[in-house]
Image 1 (cartoon, rainbow, N blue to C red):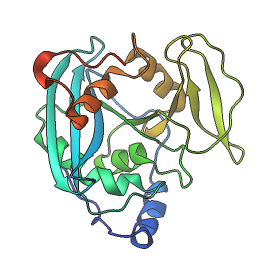
Image 2 (image 1 turned 90 degrees about the vertical axis):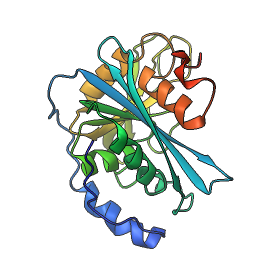
Image 3 (image 1 turned 90 degrees about the horizontal axis):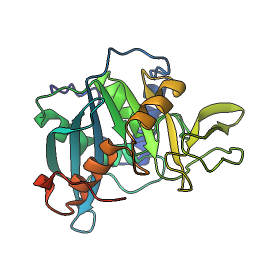
Length: 231
């Protein structure tokens, strides 16, 4: 993929905040994308006690969810760990990984928040705006918002609400297992985001895109054995 850098990468929260506020105004939470033939997952891990960011992208066919291509990138970590600003820590390396792939995905599922974020710019939004591509935030834990009790069966969901605004959904992707927190990233509505997350999660708690990207980013097991971890 060809990546266009829309802003420089700040080193402090004070420098990052105005960028975050500006980009949040550019997020689109309506469906604006073409038919999906390829879905991708992106994730980042860290090496050398956090000094190096290890980013991964995995491209899968859709709807068969077979791995088609993957790429890794290592980059010095330049932004501190600050909740609410993780995209500034992880995206530079993610962009490096995306530059290496030859198949351009039609939709990217991010291991993190979309608009379910204090300033409505989680990593899925940030990445989507930078790439001008459809993205979905699929987080494993709650950052902000409240929701009603969630039924135990697969496919059940409840709106995630923050300050009177629906910012995402708490989604049960596997019966009796902890839910995921899904939110629009960019150019994808919440209803559509829920649908694609479910279609990318045929068996386990996490989408296949996330499972592959996590395995690659964390350097677990044999990457080429075509068997993501059983999580």
